[in-house]
Length: 237
Picture (cartoon, rainbow, N blue to C red):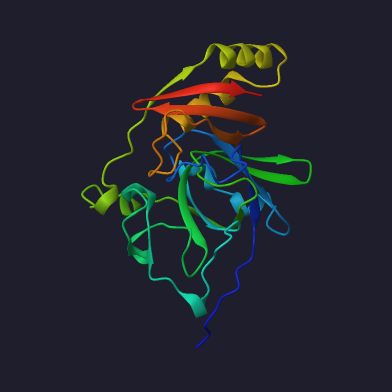
């Protein structure tokens, strides 16, 4: 029997998540728009005929930016999920950790439209949790009656993460208004940024209200602080 598989890359995700820090830990927690840029020979509209009848899609993708990706000769059977504070170890197959034997992820997203622009075919979606540039290896329709299990148990992740209030410092508010006036950002982008920050992207074990964390989102560099139930944006450029 074969010990490995080779999968084609059918496209790449184009998203505002330019670094892993800040990406929601599950899909559909933030309503951010992104799109898949299909590659040849998969950039054929015939391959998407009928897809508009589905509201959601499954994306099968590759964790491509792992610095410590597992290999068969150094398999780690346990990992530390952020949801458990980053201190408790559990089995890798009981998590969605990126550090796993096969670097494959699975996300359900909302389908917006499939659009042909010149020779490019783009699949626009909402709610993705994928890093910009993520290789896509398959797209499948989401089937409501079989894929949604109303009474399913989700272990340590049964409840959605809490969201914090997002506020702006005087400096960040001025910077935001200047960027809006210069038409370098949009209100939609600002709304998406605030949704991301409301989830508190810090590692679960870090509790330092004085620290300024830095994050790259789309073309923005953002500095923020977190104190109890509040995230304050302190700089934006």
